[in-house]
Image (cartoon, rainbow, N blue to C red; front, side):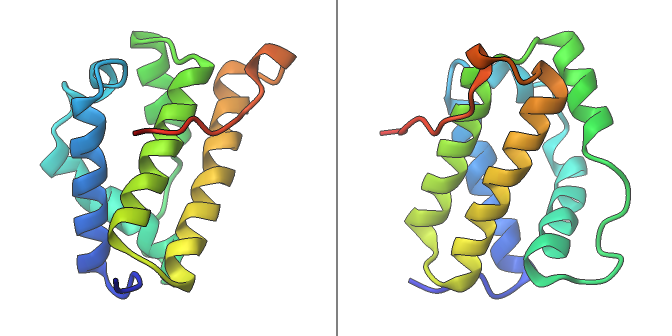
Length: 133
């Protein structure tokens, strides 16, 4: 398997990942109303900035969109766990290498930060990874 080498690889990864989330009954509600094709370039630019450190690839903040989603459909601990497990599984099924590992590590940090900012840090919200079969 190849490593993540280009924006085209990120496009494939993001498309495959969100397709998997839409198949998950617990996660579907968060994503089925989003115009994915319109939002996808921004997501690719975000990961381009993270993975390839491309200057100015992404500007803005992830939080307002996710806070808005949380108001519509409250996030719970398991939603972050499913998101992360699905992301890691998608990477592992399609890529291997330094960038593949880096993007998974970044996803752990991003997920933990978003979980903390959105639902808090009390003990019942400890962040763990749920295995997706």
